[in-house]
Amino acid sequence: MRFIETWTPATLVATRDLSPAIREFLIKPDDFNGAAYPVGSHINVAVTINGQPETRSYSLVGEVDARGLKIAVRRAEDSRGGSRYMWQLAPGARLEITQPASLVSVDWARGHYCLIAGGIGITPIVGAAQALARRGASFTLHYAVRSRSDAAYLDELGALLGDRLVVHASDAGERLDLDALFASLPKETLALFCGPMRMLDAARHAWIGAGHPLPDLRYETFGSSGSLPTETFRVRLKGTDLEFEIPRERSMLDVLNAAGHEVMYDCKRGECGLCAIDVVAVDGEIDHRDVFFSDHQKHENTKICACVSRARGTITVDTLHRADAV
Image 1 (cartoon, rainbow, N blue to C red):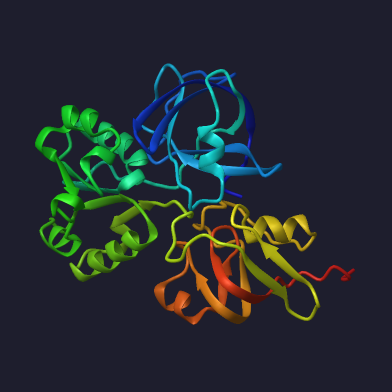
Image 2: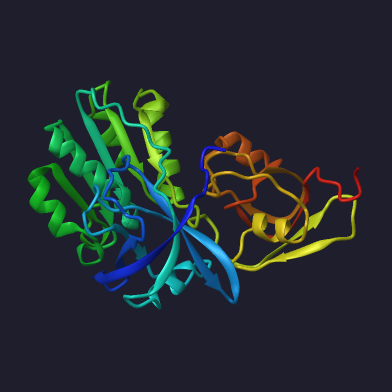
């Protein structure tokens, strides 16, 4: 496993509202030593949703801070409950969190960098911008938001980056044209992206269309974003009469494992593919929220990443686990 989850107790030191819908949380682990962590790092936070223990993953904001670890959470009604839990916490609350971990690798020897953030996807991009500015690198940050009033860290980034920050506010007609942007970049550019799934799909198509190597587009994801609203759906197990309801606040992975139908997993972010299981039938529609499968594989609907992907209606799957096998 790439992520060995070492949990540690921590205290919520302070909160700060960055916009009407985005709140920053300063969290200090009991064993915090101020050690630096890689760009693109995240932590998992233990939460309680409808009386059930769950975990949620949040990107760390900025480079290391002597006061603790910072995350920012958008309050979303169409979510699985993590944001509602976090927003009801007050300073002094005790938490359990994991150590920072990252899947994003950055080649610091590139001639130019392009940072792209969509909405709350700015959270891991802040640290990348700080690191590149500190190194004196050539880069721009393109920040796509609904409106400037909804843009977290806008003042801080403007002070740090000046005209290297380009804000694309859709309510002002300043929509981000990924095709034009990527076509204008030097061929050796390394791009770092974080945003909702639809925006990532568009970015990958535009990146390839502009003739850039796909490995030069690095990204952080948040698997809560999808094409369909987050809603309850049902899962049947092949060869049995078992059917499970997957409530909107829980993942298929968690429900199946809690019921004893073992599904292997690692990242729980839709990135590694270890939790992928076979899809036998679909009575409805699958909402693939992973970044592991290709567009073609998602269109085939023969496998699903149980940790983040969801559905509308009922799907039949084969976990390959047989409870009566010896």
